[in-house]
Length: 164
Image (cartoon, rainbow, N blue to C red; front, side, top):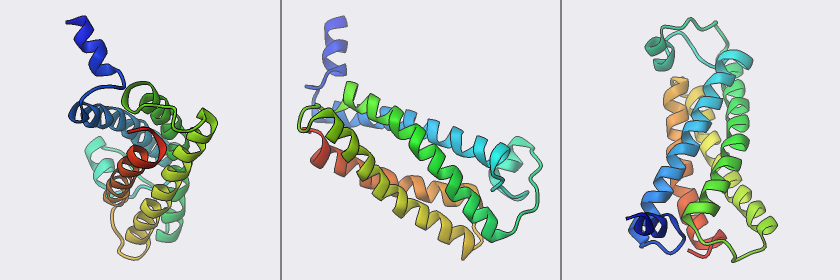
């Protein structure tokens, strides 16, 4: 039983198991990103409004903030979450999901961040447009950002950065 678990946690797992591990690692990294984003948006750079679903669910009070400032603050909080969650995600992916070795680890790390950076730019652009132009709730716009990043990141990490 322990040998089977070790094999599944290793780099030579079946592709379906690999995808499940990617999902777990990505879910954990997304959790880190969400935590950092909302802590930043609550304590450092206000980007939540009183009608935001997260504010209502947690029974918080949010300050009034102009839509443009809210969009800017949300992008800054997203940047902080991006850096912290991607360091965490890189470590998990390298240890448990993909085979390292296609590139030197420094190049691998740089490519990992470059790919994540592309998905971050696209996701943050979607988030910012949804907030600034459509007046969307910060939480919903952030969710659209995460979905866009997830789709881009899996394909690029599997086929460009790691050995599969």
